[in-house]
Length: 515
Image 1: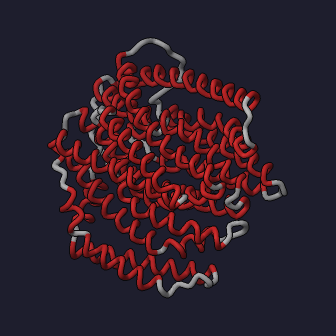
Image 2: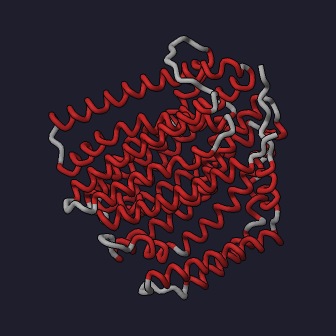
Image 3: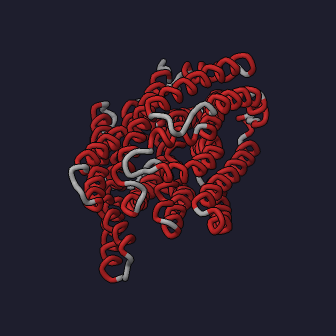
């Protein structure tokens, strides 16, 4: 029997390394480039290939592919390698066509349409980074395949490669005086990082002898099932990503600085989301798909219950900490170089708003994967459409009065509504999960109050004018003590979280039958 102790620890360790390097990358990025037009143009251009990456790689296509491949592995293991060749052959061709068409469209737009200078910069950077789309989409699919095969190492550490590449390109760019040239070097660094993210999992799949690359174009019933799941799923993923992209475009139209501040504030959510939510979800989806393929309802219920309880326990605490420590954290990490104290002050309310929505971002991602494990991609699409409509209404209502903060409020309000819809439908449709939200939250309230009281009291001793070393040392003490206080209070008030963690770590991966 194989235990999931190693996969979860690998995902958490890899994600922690990736988020720390990602944070360092952003610190260096904003210190060198500030929060002006060049930085904002890069962030918008980088969001465009990321939009398609989430659609075709980590998002809808991967979510459609994993359950079908898991079922193929369970029932027809001998033909699973041939199935991978059929699937990857099509994905390579389709991605190549999409990238070529996008480059032609952007070139024509730049040549024949009157475009303001700042938007021309966005188009140039997008063209440079479009090849990254091909690498990262295939890398995400290779990693999804490895996860089903119970190999998680490269999936966990893959984002580290991009961060290292971007850090090296930023280091090279410091020798240049022109910000426009610097941002071009960083854009090329993104493509190089994408290449290594593609190359390594591809080689690992070959070394496991689970797949030998070969171009194939025959028809297959399971391929039709993937595209049948992908088409509605891509609409749902597109709605979420269009939501994000629209937010950046609206922010760029209001203020060149707003894009950078929104991105920076949202980045601090990625550490707890990546470390806790996506690490758990990356292990959850293959396990849940295998259990559902083998009709093991009791084991599926145990996996989801424990994942949900553990995720709530971790994200609620992270939400409180980020809200109360927003200013000293931003001041410590980003008040360097061209990123000034006034920039920090502008970003603080945005980080506080996003921190309120942190648990809902994680829970929404988790519940969406449950529907995907049941090969239901249509329900999340419908709910995502409602969330997008709410986002647009709230954004246009608030942007005039609150500027960037209005966009942050619109983002969390739409995410909360999306979570509530998903939860309601899931509990009604899949009754074997036996999910109840309020009992999960009720026992944590005393622990949250104790944690919040301690962090608020301790943060009063922090001064904005303190030296960086002093602030770093003080934050380390506060975070360490608050973690211990929260852990001890959970042990006495709601120790189920520890049992859930133990159960998840000891869970045995379902065996795959041999042909």
